[in-house]
Amino acid sequence: DTEVTQTPKHLVMGMTNKKSLKCEQHMGHRAMYWYKQKAKKPPELMFVYSYEKLSINESVPSRFSPECPNSSLLNLHLHALQPEDSALYLCASSPGPGLAYNEQFFGPGTRLTVL
Amino acid sequence: AQSVTQLGSHVSVSEGALVLLRCNYSSSVPPYLFWYVQYPNQGLQLLLKYTSAATLVKGINGFEAEFKKSETSFHLTKPSAHMSDAAEYFCAVSVDTGGFKTIFGAGTRLFVKA
View 1 (cartoon, rainbow over the protein chains, first blue to last red):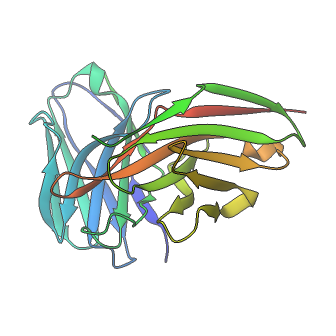
View 2: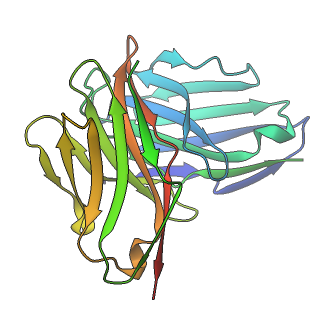
């Protein structure tokens, strides 16, 4: 299995809702990432997990809360989001956290709309 | 600081023509460079990567890129464009900030005309 899966594919939520995005990989990768991508822009890194521990937080607002329950799963909990948070949220994984030459494997993304 | 710059936000070619997408990097140390492709409403997919093993790197779908240190460039080429190559292409560099992360260029949208 060489893919990263993300659910749901689309999500519409109000500003007072609480929702979660889910990401899963079964490639034995030990680094997992969350990115935010606005239209016609490159992905922006949000969080990095290395060996299930949060290693990088790119000063993301606390209304985004990541969680890595095990080496295969990555969640992003959403609460009190703003309309400007509407974007494509991409999950990625890579084999080794400390290896600069490792490429990342991306999921198809969750298209989030905040009303 | 390490970074990449993609020249041209849009490139248009005819089917069968040469594809050339430009990327220049800025790095004080040998960089690890990547090209990713993103088709509409999909995630990113690796086309190829440079890890200093060879300056000419061959990737998937007939793409290749040449690392030129003297020009600080890593341009992506394909001899003959196909309609299915129409997509967004991102050049990227791996940087060490106490943990490695990938910095993406702004992207180049490739249009292929019939």
